[in-house]
Image 1 (cartoon, rainbow, N blue to C red):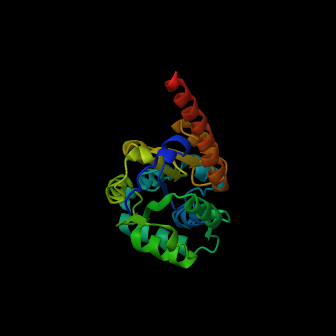
Image 2 (image 1 turned 90 degrees about the vertical axis):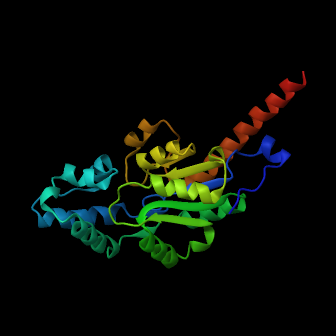
Image 3 (image 1 turned 180 degrees about the vertical axis):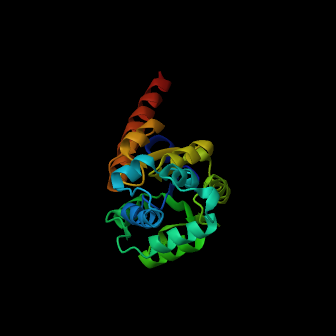
Length: 244
């Protein structure tokens, strides 16, 4: 999916973004409670203190291995592969997982506005594909990039491959996510980022990134509209100044 060329009208009146790259877990998918439930089953089996959504969102991060260490897991005595598989078994069986109520509407609005849509996720690729199929959301996305493992380490390298496939200047790509890692990946790739504060990390943590932080996924279309108006006014002023 190549980026469509900018028309003269685009350059004056539209946003600079041609593509939106979405995170999956915590952004389009509401799975925080399922994550808490899965990790608590692992903690309980090891007689470690349990967590709750507030404490989870205050501590969770990437790489996930560091989060496990902070919770008290003695990973030098654990089989990390088995631990990751067991967590995912618990997580995927949890009945609280659901697509956010606003997800389909937001994707429809962004597609109707002319944006190309893709997913970049730290979820394992086959799990990601299966969840998208179950939610009947595959048709919204030109590319869906997950990772080849269950470890939750990073999606930076996968992001580089996605940008190569998009064949779009990084300045024309907007990332939408729910963690500081989403911002780190976007920044490393030269892309803009907006974060949503209803996922896996708290608003107070996300604000440290210095990029826009929205309360809810459903706020994304309004944010894009405000940005479009702001940039349109700026472009029009610049055009008038240039004529003098």
